[in-house]
Length: 148
Image (tube, rainbow, N blue to C red; front, side):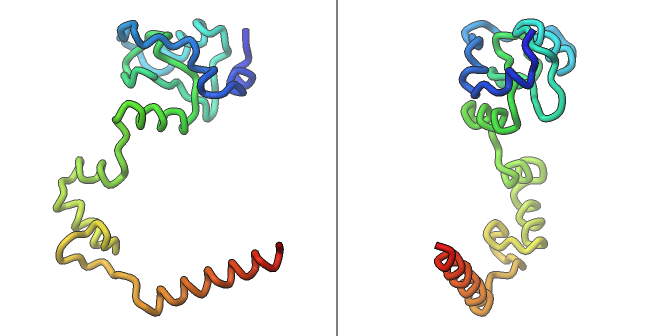
C-alpha cells in the first residue's frame, strides 16, 4: 500500500499514467466517497484527506471507472476543465445564471465598468488615480533597483 502523501509527490503526468479514456464511463451511482474507495483500491493507495481531490479525467462527475479517475489538486482539476473545454470564468457563470443584462447591472453596481456595458454607473479611473498608481510603481522599481 502506498501512502497518499508519497503518491502525491509524483507529477501530474505520472499520476495519470494509468488512465485509459478509450474505455467507456461507468456510472454505478454513489458519491465521491465511494469513488475515492474505488480509486484507492485500484491504485493501492490510502484514501486521501485535506486538499487532495478525486479528479475525473473524463469530465464526468458520476463516472466511477478507475481508469478515468486520478488523485489530484485544485490546479489539476482546473487544468482538466480547461483541456476539456468546460472551464467557465466567473463572468461566464454569472451571465449563465442571471442573463447578460442582469449580470451587467450587477457589475455596474459593483463598479466594474469593463463589463458593465452601456449606461454603466461604474467609475473609471481618474487621471489623479492613474498618476498615483504610476508613482507607486516607480517607487517600487526604485526600491528594487537599490537592493540589486
